[in-house]
Length: 273
Image (cartoon, rainbow, N blue to C red; front, side, top):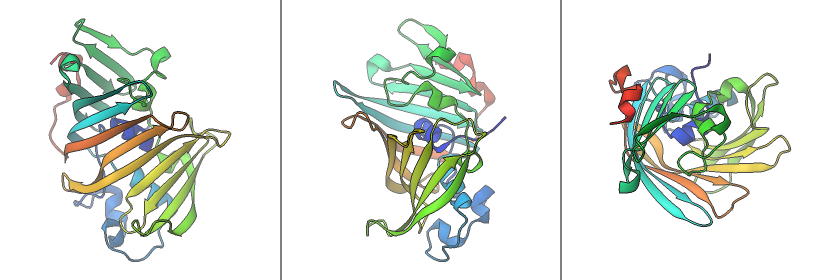
């Protein structure tokens, strides 16, 4: 059983499932990367798999807590939700909706590959069936399936650098990495293209293609700042390619990592609180 999530998943859960950007503690991959990976320009002789693994761990950690706002814009409506998220390990997450008032108390619990939703208006806890995995989560452009996928880019994809240079002077030198799924990998994308800043390995965008090389969605990263002791993109936007005027955007207001959370936090009883 894999224990790590894909970048796409993270996107969504946004960090539900923890962080992992170059922790200052120097643990995990962070400890094996050269100094320039944490903000200092230097040797650019990095293995492409190491680069993508570093990016993939961007919003992970052993545990995390976040307050954020999710805004969903479609052709016909726009709405924003304020939410609080706890995560532990890579398979436990609890999301509570704080506002607006009509959505307050709505909650989602993920444990392993199971998802439950609590709907306070009818005071019911509903387990999300497999037939609903492709459905939208809270009206966003993320799906329930995005929540449960546990793919790890560095393990499931072959990675190569397809561009090394400057696209936009404001970003400085960047790498563009193309990811092709390995034959046995249980993934849905035909390929992924990700642009990463060389100076600090911050991702700028990720483009997701189907098996016919048709662009399906783009994830962009913005407003990089230090939160919880780590440099992270505090705003992420997901745009579906077939709906150019629509998007889902997440903005982090608070983010902490490596905190002590009881396993009881991720129980069905907590959904009703």
